[in-house]
Image (cartoon, rainbow, N blue to C red; front, side, top):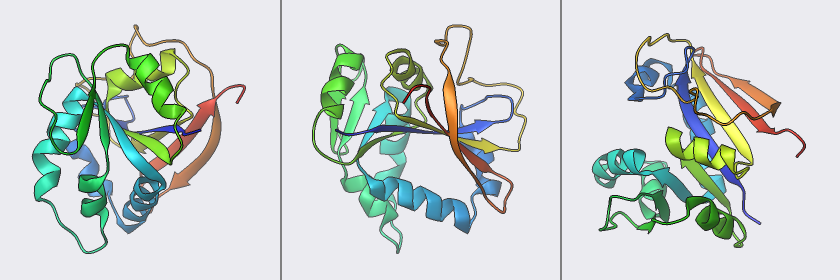
Length: 180
């Protein structure tokens, strides 16, 4: 059974939108962590906004360690009700997203990696479909912007399963659902 791993960049005040503020904190340690995380997965699970941003940027990227090639070649499952022409190796999940993700989890294979995609993360949390939530916490207060958790977010209890601190000051706090 596959796991859903949600990996979200977040500020100290909970902002997840337009994470340009991550750049000063993305050091060699963070790059290594990101690479390990990506190569443990065999597909991406994305919300529409994240997918559109990635699909506009990643196809033209290259690097020497294979990260860009991996990003570009792996399957992407995209939660959307508005897009109708999949590109960039994508399959659109257009109907019952929790049921579609449940079916994906039951398949053989590696992790399903969620990048960003705050609305999708909240939907998956609500339906107990996230196996691990990795919050890449950056020592920045952005003050404005979309936040990961809002008054509409489902109430969930999570248990900490690890923290990784990078020399840049960013930290990845990993959580699993309580009881698992």
